[in-house]
Amino acid sequence: MTKLEGAYARCGMDYAGTIDRCAGDEQMLKDLLSMFLADDNFKKLMSALNENNAEKGFRAAHSLKGSSGMLGMTGLHGVLKDMTECLRAGDTVSAASYREAAEREYAAAAEMIGSL
Image (tube, one colour):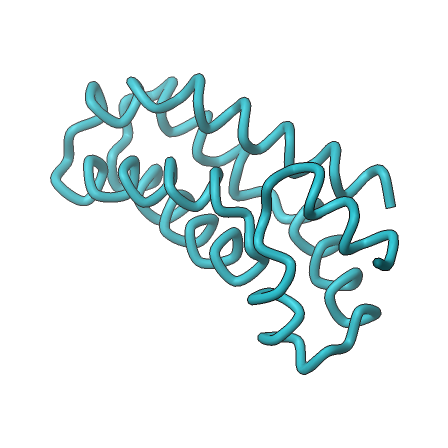
């Protein structure tokens, strides 16, 4: 088991599917994980929730949903999927109910990436 595979396993994330999507290239996956951390969409999402801005929040959540899904971050992807649908409907109150879970899952993903 590689260090990256172990990190995914400890966090309950989908390494097998993710490495498959990266054609078995762990360096590519590491690069994508670094890009994920550098992306500012999580900050934009939190800001949009603070501002009750469904349109801005939807764009950020939708982008994060895609990248977290591609990267096998199953917990974060699941929360963002629900949050995205609320924001698509313009419902910032319901979207905000997922905020704590999104923050927790994002922090877990960031911690996993930082451990590499």
